[in-house]
Length: 215
Ligand code: SAH
Image (spheres, rainbow, N blue to C red):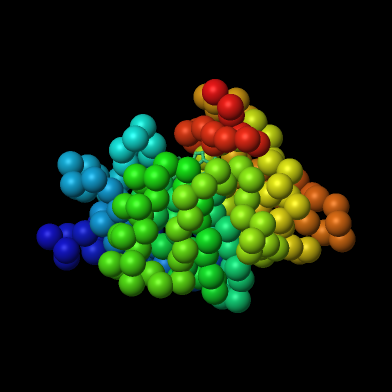
């Protein structure tokens, strides 16, 4: 079974991620390493490497593999960075990040999801990830500034606290728009101002909380 998953993982990287244009070898390698099937519920494990998002409980989803690869590549990590993720969910994206930077802080508002992800990441040996249960739309000022911020839930706009907590030269990837459809945006902070680039259309579950959706 594990061998089948290994082959499925290699195929996922070449057919879905590399073929669509993700080039960063470190990102591709991380996605070849992290056992995505260990991050999804048993009943969908056989679909863990398929080309779509999957349910992870509590009405939440783990993103499609390509979107994980694309968002991670946009952060341009080299290994020295401190990264903040908003929306831990299963912990899969955090595991990928942990192989590519120095330290990952990941925020999840749902206590049950945070607990499961924390236990899972620890059991799998991703020791440079810290899972914190809180409203991530406020960021994590205790550890700011961050070299990279990745938001894996959709926000009506880029939350100001997250912009404030981005390091000079830092990069943030975030889906913004309505609750049904969003644009993935890259925000880069340069000499105090923020340059925003639209990347592509995406659909994410909503970011709740003070600077997200209040409904
Ligand atoms: N990155 C995850 C998938 C994220 S799904 C993975 O790799 O599996 C989006 C997650 O964002 C959900 O778990 C949801 O509970 C969480 N979320 C929504 N609003 C949030 C907020 N304000 N703060 C922290 N987490 C939030």
